[in-house]
Image (cartoon, rainbow, N blue to C red; front, side, top):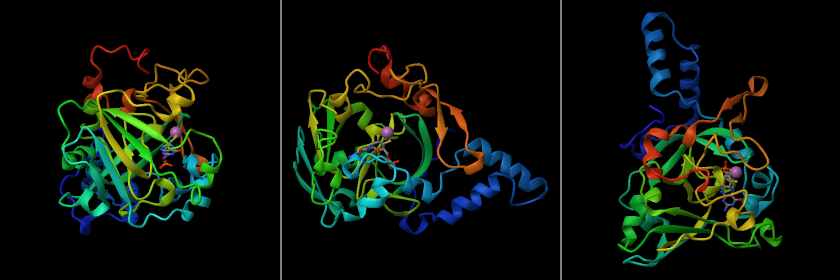
Length: 302
Ligand SMILES: Nc1nc2c(c(=O)[nH]1)N[C@H]1C(S)=C(S)[C@@H](COP(=O)(O)O)O[C@H]1N2
Ligand SMILES: [Mo]
């Protein structure tokens, strides 16, 4: 299986980092001896081959241009963001438009844990254990109307707390979008935590999108607005440079960025053991998502 799937996680089950570290040791064959342990380890490798990056790696190496363009700017400056009384405005083609509080958005939903590959268009990658909800379940609360074909997302604009927004690095707000069938896919998440802890500001607190088969920039952070529409919405990186960044931005090792190859990537972390890996079609989620793009020319719709 390409990803780990848990549908029945209660808040009490949410797994601390130590568990992952123990599992990492277990999978590396460091813990346990004898035939039974060895068989168990082999099984774990086939079923759950993803070894998450450390909390440090995930929270100290980020892209969040609202806080600056450097990889450590988000960790340095995102603490200025106040996420109290957060709301998401859901509007457009929905039956129940309005400002939804975090409690309203997540009420009645069970927090899930998903360990996903994460691949930035800049050719680096991590594995991140997210906590959150399927986007589909959140959209259902607002009642998506039959004419809706796309979902548009916007990040908060608050230059007083987001120092990167005092510069015109991008045309704020940061915007992203998905086709409705992509948004409703069971892999598509709204994440509210990592390693069972609340989402750190630098990773997109309090709630962000996670679309594991697309380049990282599609996974928009600190969302304040979701709009259901019948037209493909404008998206920040496409607006900034349409030749280099398409609307779809599916991870594809065969379609290079105009300025670099996408055939492989650097794995973040690992210190002396840092390595490169081949990039997988749809970031390893081909079996799950390829049918969404049947008949589409992926070099044209990149
Ligand atoms: N609002 C907003 N969302 C954003 C970004 C951003 O600059 N602003 N950067 C994107 C990019 S390029 C990547 S690779 C991921 C990085 O997520 P991470 O820092 O949690 O690894 O966030 C994406 N979401
Ligand atoms: Mo990225």
